[in-house]
Image (spheres, rainbow, N blue to C red):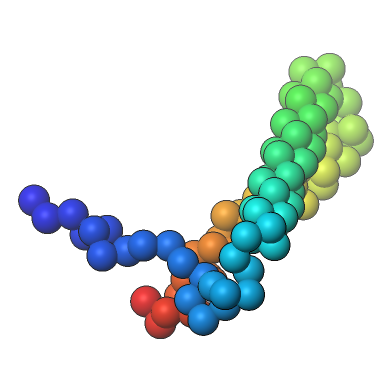
Length: 92
């Protein structure tokens, strides 16, 4: 079976000379910090939701559901950014 991702190599495309070196490292660190930050807040919100449901506190459960939404959406967006960049930069 052929490897369909054999041709795919990550790169910055025309911006490679601009972001090579320390700037690329800084961008990567900021992205990773964002993922860790959002993951932490998602786990805390899920724990609060589980606690509110277990103790049958309806108002707190609704509030906790609201706190789950933004980190989940942010994680999806952070994971999608490299794929969107790849499509925009290379035209897939």
